[in-house]
Length: 113
Image 1 (cartoon, helix red, strand yellow):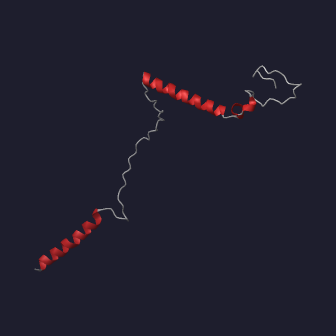
Image 2 (spheres, helix red, strand yellow):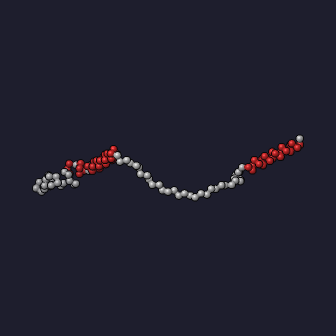
Image 3 (spheres, helix red, strand yellow):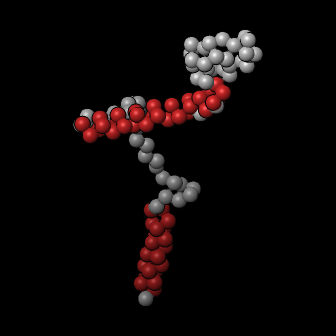
């Protein structure tokens, strides 16, 4: 009986000793395995151009967009006072008001002013 008790104690103590030394701990974290590999420099990728098929339909929509842009520019231009106000008579600046004796014929608009 005594022999079995000693063997059981010895097994229990050996179990604790093996269990504690088997894994990494905070005091002994174990070996760090570092893998050295060459650093690959990243190549700059160029922006890929979209592959546009120049079909008649695509070219039609391009023309429509271009015409719409031109119309917007004209509307913006015609918003200026020289096109909006009647007193300009197609001139850049409002023509001077002269007396009847000093009036001249304007070749630009065909009016005496």
